[in-house]
Image: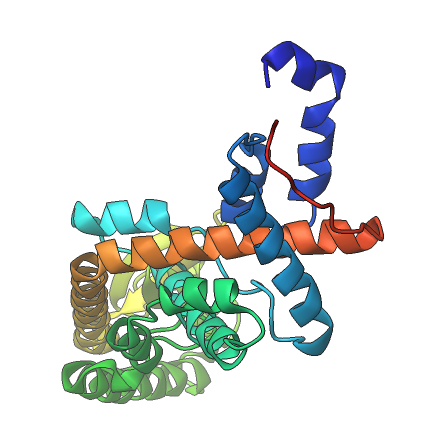
Length: 297
């Protein structure tokens, strides 16, 4: 069919409506790029897929692509050794878990939906990738203590260092001898270091390093010398934590890169399934009836 005929039929509007029934961008892109076919076998296969999906949808609430993301750009990043962030890794895991669930659903329906079952058989859930991401990263996107023995040890030492630092600073700000020199008996942070607010006229009364001052100049935020080594230890442990987290994310990224081609094929297949389900939902919304497809004479 030539472009002029498609324009006269407002075919683009039909495709836009179809894309609205897709669950994720992969299916939407396929819907918007769909063209009519003059191949009878192809048309019959499309019709069979749509009919199978239309029959299955009311009976299978799990037959959807919610939780699927088009992670193909992330796969390309991983292959270039660009470290993926926790939210990116969670999107990959969510997509793989959904692929696993859909594969099971469509395999169980093989007798009544052979076309969809064949499509489901092409889904690969890359269990090692999904499981390792789940072991290392929480649903909120935090790298878990269990991600590595080193991270668990560092975080324990970090807590000890923080507790010691805060104990020392709290003792300084609650000391009756220091009370007259402080603007407030509080501990705060400046430039990533814990400090206390010293009244400017008492500069030097509590030995320490000045990190900042208030807008009025009435308050100096100092790091007491008594807490300097503890602040350094706490900061060193923070840097060690950051380095270990980066190492873990790099390792997970390498795991994704090794499975990138497999995951890519799975996402491509999920996009095809999304298009089929969108066609079925569109047909149902129109209360459509299957046409009889006959060869051209």
